[in-house]
Image (cartoon, rainbow, N blue to C red):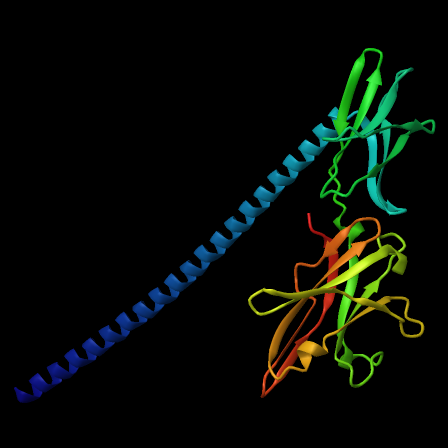
Amino acid sequence: MQKARTALLGILCVIFCATCLVLLSMVFTMRQDIAALQASVDTLSDQMESQNAYVQNSISEMGNQLAQNLAEQSSLFSRVEAQLSYQSGKLVLTASVLPKEVVEGTTYLLTLADTSQSAEMISDGQSWSASLQLEPASAFTPVVVERRATGARQEALDTLYPDNILAVRGESIWSWDTLHASQDEQALYVVLTPSADGPVSGAADVAALVLTVTDDNGVILEERDMELQEAPQSDTRLWYRADLSDYLEQPSCSIHLYTTLKTTSGLSLADSNESASFAQNENSSSSGTGIISFSPRW
């Protein structure tokens, strides 16, 4: 009897272990199936998002193309060109249009939105062109007026922005960072890059380069004109200098330097960022310089 019980228990143990193995195998298989299903769902979700983005982009492109086609169809002109330039100390707007249809007796007038400025456009047999001298402003919207015996129509062209044309590139350099200065000099140099197509083509176009010195709280300590210096040999840039030994010789100081470029044509150009900085105490000192983008502050 005892042997029979032992044998029965052995059989039951074997059955139990086999059942556990089967269950574990089923659980493992189910986890694999669930992971595969999750991966499929994630892949399908990514595909749907990608397709949705593609559809949205396609709709946007179609809308933009439709708007462009409608604008072209409703336009008086098959070709339009307008640009700003800087000539002889003045901003100049030049516009050229190619009418879709010209009835005998038709004339065209170039005007500027929100101003009374205008200029008759001249035909070269196909297109009509004109130029306007402009006073500095943040933006200009050319308007072309078509005049016929039956009445007048007008069309506004794209708005133009003069910031890039009026910009002047500069660079600040501490005296100890340039071979152009003497070793014991404690000065800041600002170097301007002239351009024949911009407001500064040479030193004669610079009325003043004003240096503003502030403390850490933005309080103005002083303003002074920087002095034009002789440029190093073969250097076509304009070099300006300011002696700052009054500050740099102090045992402790922290200054921030800003520059404003005033042209003989009446422009005032500046960079909202500081042009240079200097700080020192008993233990250390630091200085900063960089590129200066002189542009209109509208």
